Length: 426
Ligand code: HAM
Image (cartoon, rainbow, N blue to C red; front, side):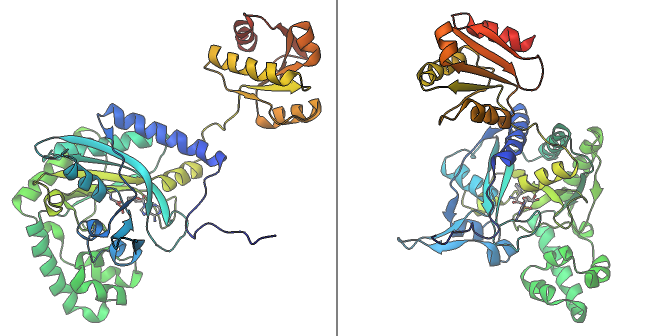
């Protein structure tokens, strides 16, 4: 036998049992997004590599070591998208969606990062994200966060906490960066290798270190909040007031800096303790400078993205599973002559009863084998059409799960759909 080929490390197949859960998640979230006035945007999975270098940031972990980048036959340097914000902004500028306009957009799809795979962390993962443009005030930040809170309710998820911070304007962030470099340089001997590397490239990321040996040093570091200018402080205070009004609890986390470079002002993460180290299920914030940084007219932006694998793993941990797929009716076609009439009948029933799922037996098999398949399909009822039934102008109806005993006969006439519905709804 030829050698089999495996999927790429960190990239998974989703089997039918899982896609039922995915479809439930996608449907629930997209319905809420639509109810808040968001419209879907679909952008290509491949983009010019420059796009992510100029937005996510050249010194971010994502761009430095995690992107799938290659040069194509035309010498273009391309990357599989590691996230959706940059692509949405690129498309918004290119398609004229942003200038002098307000937009509420959402997207869904695979993202790619070559991270070390573990539970909750994959090399191909999926996000649903939302991006808003042209709304400068903290009211849109608050509305976005309220919408995410509604997601958790709709998905039945509990114990997800909101952490909030402000990174201020680029100017206040630059001033803070300077102070932070001074502080960490004075304590250079205590920095681990990762932090030493970040010291001049991306010192804010040192605050994000999970190394226990670094925690005291980080806790004593100067706080970003002391460096926020008045405008940033006001934006943040108003956001906190709005969240209080909306009854949304949060914790202020001055160490929350995020791994992507484009943020200004508000940043937030929704975190659970039930998924181990990969507990952030949703993250986002404001990126007021990004549109102009990518060549568009200055337009404010704010958004978030959720990791769908993590949300599904959390639903599993909290024992929340969508009902598995089961057809309502399995149509048994016993004997060759029953096949053409049976397939025709199945089409007629599907037209007449769009609310029912009807799975016809295809591929032959004895009556017993077909009955086994009907059982395995989980169908509540089987319809049995054999040569005898055809000759008598009848079809058998059998409850698979004991709703009624034995088998009933229904006439194969124009009223069959109504009689069938009445029989199974009784
Ligand atoms: P992010 O924090 O890089 O932000 O990713 C958002 C979410 O995607 C994470 O909180 C996590 O749930 C999920 N995620 C990230 N990496 C992985 C992975 N390797 N495996 C599984 N799940 C993962 C962004 O991507 C920003 N674009 C969010 C944003 C939108 N900010 C403003 N607008």
